[in-house]
Image 1 (spheres, rainbow, N blue to C red):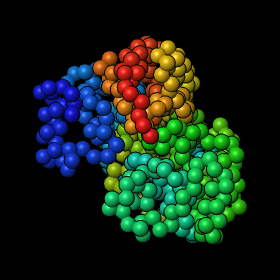
Image 2 (image 1 turned 135 degrees about the vertical axis):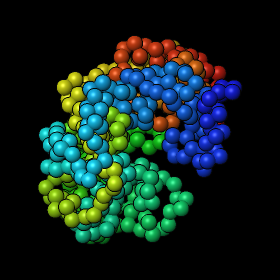
Image 3 (image 1 turned 90 degrees about the vertical axis):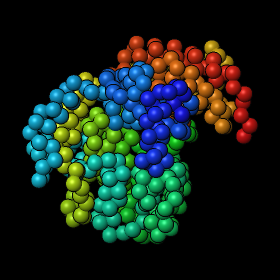
Image 4 (image 1 turned 180 degrees about the vertical axis):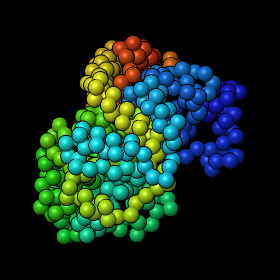
Length: 413
């Protein structure tokens, strides 16, 4: 529950349970969060978010990733309004589609072309389809525990999923070259592609950046087997490097899947690829009634232009490091060890000796009461809208969080 007696959030949850199975579904279900977390929100602006009961929060989830410039960024909103005045859902795309594709090809070194979808699952599924069409093979390698979407071939849940849905999926361990080589051998000449996350960001676990040896091995194996290297940049795209999250490793994918932050909250996804898979991309049939939304594409053009002009990645890196350093100092002050893993732009904070996550839940619940929205089990997100004052407020809330966590007994594994 929301933790507020007779709150609007509580009322909406009760109404939703009557007309929505379970009241809410998927990763946004607040029932999985500590007591006091709202389910329903009223508005957002910049780095702030307000729930339906009027509570204001500094937002470190950024709508689970789509918000990269800040809620309702004025330049993005203006671009969307201009396009909305002309039309959004038409009989075909607007000029904005070509402009956005040109921009992506200009920004992403591994991209010779772009194609658009609506959400991350669309993009990863289409990338797999392209790999199979281009290689005329079936097997797809994915890392054990990785999240690539919510459809049967890759869903984290097996409810309603058949064995046949995953008949051509082979698992490997992220950053484990030997495991990857064994999976390639198991494909036995039928390898269509290897899917890799930008970094290992499994739910509720320490995050791991890719090693250079792993990235180079994935590229070399795909080259040797004439298969597609697919980077799933849906979650991390444009936060670590504008050119793609593996650009800093010097390893270029054949196909990349993008979504979340590409249009600062407007629904949009994309695949970029090289010329090797251009013909295969033209040959498959993949579509959707809303995939050519002119409004979202105009917002995407504005978002990418602002990110490039204002060095958005640099800003998020500096603020993320400030948050990480501050949390580490508080951890020492309170003698309560934490693990901060993954890139600083996407903070992941877990407590030692906390197998049942009681410390993490207590920490986040206390911070929420101070007006800071953290998450106890999922990586969080910085945005370009976050300021040094926001970080200071977050660290003040975290101080309360550490005190609450320290009062929790250690869990037994």
